[in-house]
Image (cartoon, rainbow, N blue to C red; front, side, top):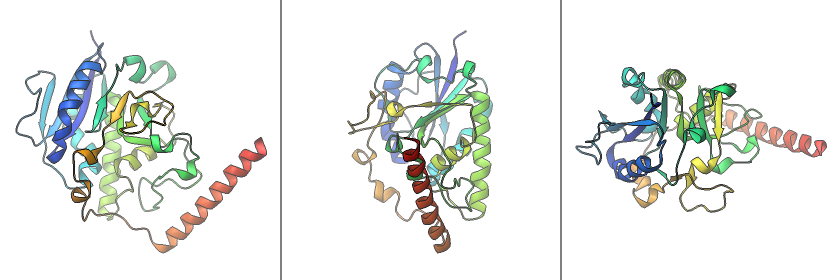
Length: 277
């Protein structure tokens, strides 16, 4: 039997504009040696490809920013029963587009290495020291990572894993986000902050380089572009969509502490690095 893979995709509101190119490129390049099904969470009346029996339309209302991204784990869990029938689950951002073949050897977690999850390094922080990572530094947030910790900063736009591992991630992060919202806290970069915190002390994940999250218009990364992240600004009025979005403000005391902690982390890492040389 062919390996069954579920590709999760959210296309609500104006973000439906990204679906046609994503779908066409996925059909051409994504895991051609697997049986790929698309779970499209959308409020659109119709979408290209919906007649394909492997395209599953999941009615979903459009949330205002940032809840469309913050609540995505809750959205995915609405299809938990159906998703249990797949071997792997992967999420791709709406503006993702496949630019060349993506094989199972390139994408799937490697069981022989103990891998269950798949994450992608964020291109903006590749090969940078962790004190430059934009982790959530709010101690009230369930996504908080103090300065001095963390090996990778991963993007929120491409991730996945074996079905049990990915559903476990969704359930855990959904609970953490609900807990934060009860205390009027929103993680700095929403789902991305939560995923970075989730993998902080884990060793069961595969990390891909930024070629799988390659921003449109960039040409300075030392990798080929496998998955292009199209510029939202070419399609959408981003400031208008995010106008008056709620966010969590850090107290002056926390801001002062974080400034001190960042300086201390930078000094210690630079000092140790130079001493090691």
